[in-house]
Length: 255
Image (cartoon, rainbow, N blue to C red; front, side, top):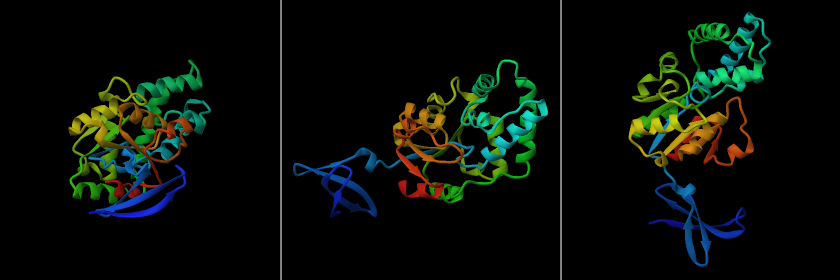
């Protein structure tokens, strides 16, 4: 049984109906007497794939500060923009982007050692959660919805940050940057994550905050949920996003 409730769909300039079924609401457009449901409207994810930095954990702001400080130590003026260009990338792609922005004479290896030392010092103080993280993780765990991490960070770095943040017990699986040949925006890491939990990519929802991550989700055929941290992606990237939300707590009704 479901209840049909009329309303007017301004976007499509057509009469439409809203039905309520098991407490859920979706849009049904009326066309020549027939009801048509949009797949995007009725999709219910069977699993959740989480990015880590900037999505679950508030690590990107301190990381940007560390980039600037490490630059000062090696005698280079590294701007916030340079640091932000690397968000969502794996270690190899970060090197390439850094050399592109700063030039071939930039002492990347020396800089990288200092940068990761600064990261370790900062994260040892503790890592804050993004808004609504524990609410969402507890909801998914209680309802036995599979969860997996897909992060550009190395395996060692990823599990260290999750341990410090106290969320390791929520995740039995993670796909990390050193496990795939091609990092985001290639789809490899999200396909690997879906494979690890045994759920087809098209049945998953992927949560991201970066342009590279959103492109990777689109390429993998995974419904994307965008929650902004430091970056506002280009319009063409946002056009492929399934849902845009303000925080992780708002994700709960989608499941």
